[in-house]
Image (tube, helix red, strand yellow):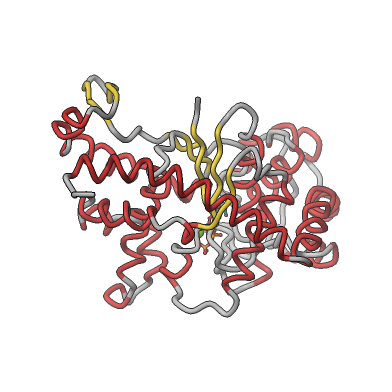
Length: 350
Ligand code: ATP
Ligand code: MG
């Protein structure tokens, strides 16, 4: 059975990219898998230390999970800081991972900007905590957007180095299983995580700049469609979305070199559960003046039930708080089981 783990940071407004690249996949994976979905609040202080309303942000991500259709009883929904084992394993992974690995991460370079010396140490170590989030449950499958691919490769590197460095200890303690990585047989404690990045919108781009990813932390609100946007806001943002002057091509090939057109077609395809080719078969040859209103209708239809349910859940926070408390308790029990074994493997007395 797969153990699915993923997280979303409480760092601002959830947007269409988060929904299509992550949350919608979380929902689809519930059937037949054991799923753990986390509001990663420890990550939210890496790029910005002080948040105006962190409790509200945490609740709103949890509300988005529930409103999108995640079942917090069959699965686990919780906030990361409620399970201190994440931070404990992250410390160990800080000692497993190499500084050079972290320095190569493009998200660190993007978020640290020019003044890298002045970025927080936490921002540099972010991928180590992310590896711990997944591996403290010995997670096997991680649904994420395309921007997280590099971090998941790093999680595999960390797991592999831990497995190899502690090989003898893992065997002696009687944990782990034999796996093969390439042709190499390894007695592994941590599994090699598989990223799940497929779909027509693995990387939704900014509506203002087709070369930049849509982000919660983008200062321009026009760059993204927020899950909490009403019909007017969605309509305005799509009408104002940057495009080129040409009409839509009739085949996906024709989207090459046209990032804004490609992005809008990808968003339409993902929202309609179609391929880009299907969308172009319908709209090829049409102008954006025809395509944009269709996209607005579709986006409003898909998002408004979620927005409505999120608003309802946010009205009375006691329900969300109870879900997070219960999820935290169940997650803690599972994480502690792993940590007992990890402490034993390393040789910490407990
Ligand atoms: P921040 O700017 O604070 O990093 P974010 O928008 O990148 O915010 P995260 O909480 O970092 O959101 O990511 C949550 C999930 O959403 C991750 O799986 C990430 O890959 C996915 N995701 C984020 N942005 C996009 C996007 N533009 N397209 C598709 N998936 C995305
Ligand atoms: Mg991000």
